[in-house]
Amino acid sequence: MAVVAATSAEAARQHGPAACEQRTQEIREKLADVRSYAVVPTRAGFEAAGRRTACLVLGAHGAVYGPLDRHRTPGMWFVDTANMQKRDCLDAPSLRRAQLVSCAGPHDQQVLGFTRLGAGTTLKKAAAQSDAACARDVPPAQYGYDPGVYEAASWAAKGAWHSGTHLVVCSVQRQNGGTMEGTEP
Image (cartoon, rainbow, N blue to C red; front, side, top):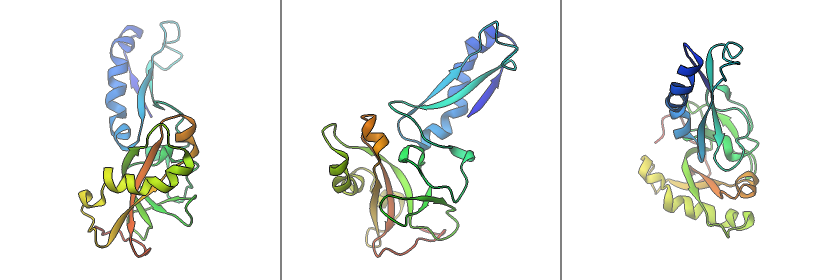
């Protein structure tokens, strides 16, 4: 996600991890269940690494699939929910497929946050319980959405269940199934 220059291998070792925490903070706040990881070069590899520490964002309990942050382009299809970010706008032609779109134009949903379902919840049960969990834990009204017009929606995927995190992506959509516009709420 970023690199941090250093004057020496010792400086990279001392300051690289904290600098990586700062450089990846914004993206980590948009994603669920991730952490920063600094790849600090050894003394022998310092010059080969370009005198830099590489800053990565890794899933805390499983993989993060696909591009993140500015490396994503409108029109990309989500392979998994792991790289859905807060405030993403989505076109959702089905309950299993979502495409990243610009929030300035029409869209079906907007990602608001994340919630976690219990360890004993199967993926099949998550499909039935996740909308209600999102309505309770990430209510659209807290983001300025009128509860008479909008409702909570959710995305649960195999990745979150195979890793054991049971994270659900919470979004908002119009109750009547219509599209949202860039000026909403």
